[in-house]
Length: 208
Image (cartoon, rainbow, N blue to C red; front, side):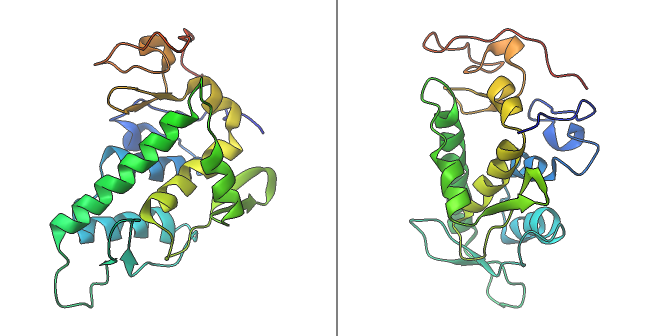
């Protein structure tokens, strides 16, 4: 797997959407970070997120609904006259976001649990992108919302595994995602100190 190109800028949240990659090679990561950092709070906002980050790049058809394991389907179709229950949608989005962040936290050492990557590959939610070293998302409408978001992370991690192994930080306390282990280690964030159970990597940010 190749590492991130030197011109690619990977930010520290919450400013991720405005600072990330100048090229198109990290669009999947941008989409995933946008969902995690600014979770859509309405059907219209979630539909717009899908349209911009998954439909427009050609990674999946426009979904008419979303679902998570515990919930009924929530429609995103504007043709439906009745507005969806926004509280139900927000609960679904929050549950999906938590599962995504928990999966990324488990991916961190010492557990280094990368089963969600294997599940994305075996489930057909990611696919080779032409270049033997690159992957792209390929989720389906019937997939859980969390699996759709995880497919975005999975595509970028499979393409740039060394980068994530070196720089991905997930706060053990609040699950905040960061890409700068030099400030708070791999398991902390600006608000929470890194835990003592994981070795803290003190290295500079990747070149921009």
